[in-house]
Image 1: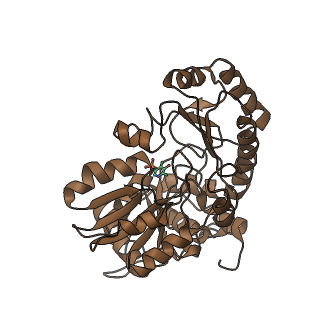
Image 2: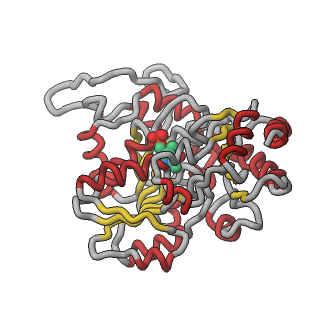
Image 3: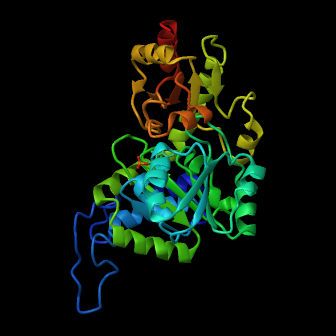
Length: 382
Ligand SMILES: *Cc1c(COP(=O)(O)O)cnc(C)c1O
């Protein structure tokens, strides 16, 4: 499928009419095991934890979208992230972006450090700082760009260069951008991963994770880890996600178009103290966003100055749904300090810009006028 362009791949990669019926949609293979013809002879499938044809279709589909050779689908984004960290032997040091997803910080600090991995969460947008944290036992650099929820960017080409020079595995959590906006493997990154719960599925009706790489040694290790831990994506969820990826490009175009209009409107509201959106000229990395992303995304965060103001605002939105998560067709709004980032110690949270007044918006694909009217009403109550 390499010769096809993105939207064509989104619809067709990994999928073919069912050989027994011609069904155009990949069936949901609800089976735990596969009958073998004779000892040692099977059709490529042996047991459901190891592989499933619906899951295989999704893995091939998303791998194609990321321009990667192979991918593996996990039960959730966290299961995918856990597997990636397990590539490393005990005693390894990892440099990671400081504003990573809260669950990533939690698994690193509260679980994996007990098993001998060491993490430094730093501002990876500053490559000179990244260089300072290099240790003899550093084995991986783990990036989120744009970061959650302050929308800082990290220069992926600079990270690739640094990682290659120092023989580190480079990893990008590409959930916020989706492969439609950003393809880290094309910039030389070793592993790209996703919470497919977000844009890739796009309809807020399943949880899943995905890891894609061009490195066959890495994929073999991950396959072994996945088979051993068993954090696999179920067939029905794989099918839902496959259904989602078909419309990824049209959804992302609309998400981003709406977000740009909303960010522009928010920039004119006096009650908003700080506005984070990489598509605004005022954003520190506006140029980098132009360079490494197709569009600046559909995630926006803004500071209303205090917890009281944020509470009032969130109590008065009606169309925007107050909920964790992001990337669905509906606009979601959240309060990172008490929701997604509650697992960060307060001092670190504030230092990372996740202040008590910060509100995060995952712009949906509704009519933008309706979203703005909702935000305008809620803002009038602050
Ligand atoms: C949601 C999310 C995760 C975790 O994914 P789950 O599917 O909820 O386990 C990881 N990284 C980012 C950036 C996310 O937004």
